Length: 341
Image 1 (cartoon, rainbow, N blue to C red):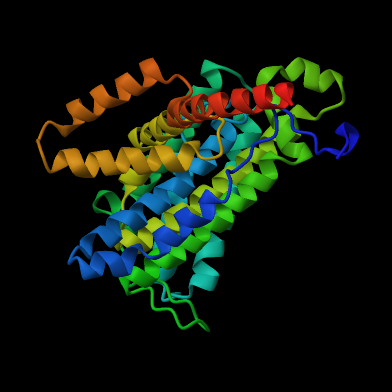
Image 2: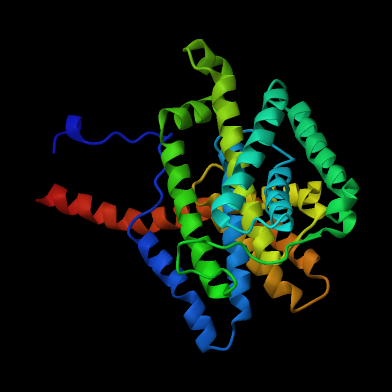
């Protein structure tokens, strides 16, 4: 194949990985029966929680990692999605085909309004406005005594997937549904990031003025990404409400937004696998350390500090460097052999 016919790859193009991804998804799909055989069914719920937060972290990574927009109010969209499912369940609407898209729609609308206002600012002002909106929703949820107020809103039962032979009341089935949704979200984000809109979003992250000078509509691109990220976060909230059986105002607290941000930075901001990997490592470390010591937050903070200091690009950057070191000797040997030939 000639050079002109080879597919072009730029710094704006992000690959999701190779064939190993299929092996990962197959291994994850086999996790519930394996845990059941080992008598560790509880960890199916833990794995489902990891998948849900992987969706939420991936949505934040779209605007934080790829767009350079440091939103400190992203948890608001997770909470809005959760409350949408909780309120509908309280009204007797149990169908997932209605409740989950509604959660995405309501969160997307909230993101559209918040984005239209906050994206007109930059830097610390953008951070503070998104934080202010999140806290407004938090205190609104606290004040809604009809829906539990500060105690939260119990979800009477998990949603129902009418027409499918899947009972979400079964933890294994719920895990598989979450896995399918995570795969769909990840594939959609990969396509979006590698689309012209995604390239403009990444270009605006580096230099908004230059993108605008070339005809790029920076505000429209960032607003679109903000709305998409909010809608996906709403889906994560819908799943979280079903998993926990309770919707709490704490879901919208600023500390939850900070936790999502830590997940993205830990995994690698601006990398497709950054959000999911960071969510998995963060939650698994939390589960492991909390069973060892009551001071697990201190140990977790120390581990995160080490990662930030020695892997500025997060765990995905660390894995990329390790992979480059492994392939460099093989490439050099291949080039040397070709030269001798």
